[in-house]
Image (cartoon, rainbow, N blue to C red; front, side, top):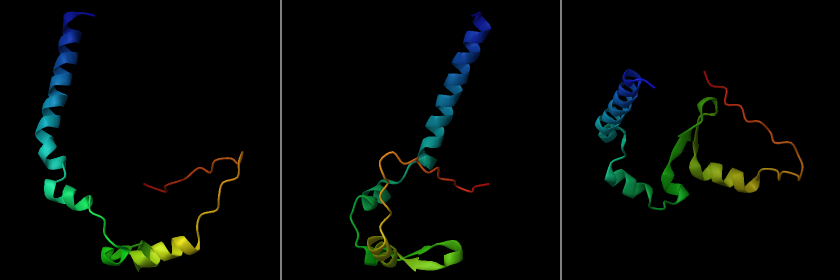
Length: 88
């Protein structure tokens, strides 16, 4: 490789690291919020979740539905179902 290619690669890596260092405080989770996320909360205290067209549903109701209607077990040798995320 010639000298200009190596300089370009080094400059690109340096610029990427500089941007990452400068953007880190805006992307990081604050320490207080991180500590709160490590504490266990009862489902009753979590409130509601907005499920779009289904409306707002309490988390406790979602947990009860999951316990009453668990997902069907996957049989051995069954093809893996592809999950589609219908994004934009």
